[in-house]
Image 1 (tube, rainbow, N blue to C red):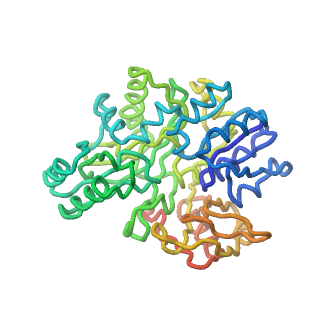
Image 2 (image 1 turned 45 degrees about the vertical axis):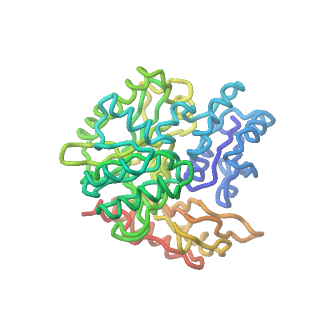
Image 3 (image 1 turned 60 degrees about the vertical axis):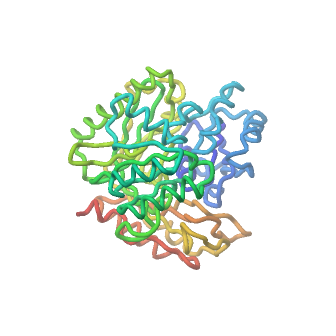
Length: 429
């Protein structure tokens, strides 16, 4: 099969790396890709090719898929899904993996998602939706400022401001709703009560009728150690977490996935692809913070290091509605991913810094370096984004996986490199 993967981050590198291992794959292109993706090969032979087409150039991607007779397109990021790339490809008779525009609303509209959860009894935080400032300010005061203020639309994973005081919450509401710091994504906001507990990431592969739950993982969103600093796209993750037993995970599936799929059926939504709920485990039980309509990044990196079997076969089952009864195998060993970012991220940062040590780090056992914000300059690999690399390792236990990931990090150098030193520490406590 000839495959097209859309995107350029660490998630897409992980997808390409795993898809390239499938005996079904004969050629893979990635649009636009990155330096690491362009170095992957299919079972040591055919090289993966990067294509200079933006992930949001839907017509350009469609034309490429037609010209090259692509058998399956795999969509990584949220924006093309929200823009309707799945509908466009399906209307052209092409097979594509990911939720259609209607289903992608679970991520592209916090307002839609919150309303859906309330309609179908999915446990979530108490919230209010606002498009004008005065009632929003009144609501944050009623919560005594302890709330999450969320832009309705897509904001590169950064459109959520966590507040613990009335002053901070009022500032966040003004920033998003009045000052439009996230552009049109902030024309409406959702304000949620601040839930107390442990946050985890869940993922489920869906085929329109069936949802297959993945093991747990835990993302680290803040830029600095001890969950301090600004919100980012994710500075690292690990899987599995120790916070839910198998029995508790089954209960979460019953409380969240079952009503989600039933709600979709009731509202005529066909959900195919990955459903990624962020969940807070509270004293009252698990509650959904928000839904994402694609693989998490960097969760993808740890999941695909642990996934046994053929990812391409699973994605085809998802597209074709054949997931029911399909077994998904997982390596019992934990995986840890440490994100190395450009200095200043998530604020302003410089690009085109030379990266060294990649070959040495890659030689370590059970280590894989997934590229995110990188590009090639002749024989050199240089930085080209905020999150640069996802240094990922497996280990016999969480301590070993963590130690391996950080050992690999020490080999890699570029000017201004920053990373958290406490990834997975919560899992060891």
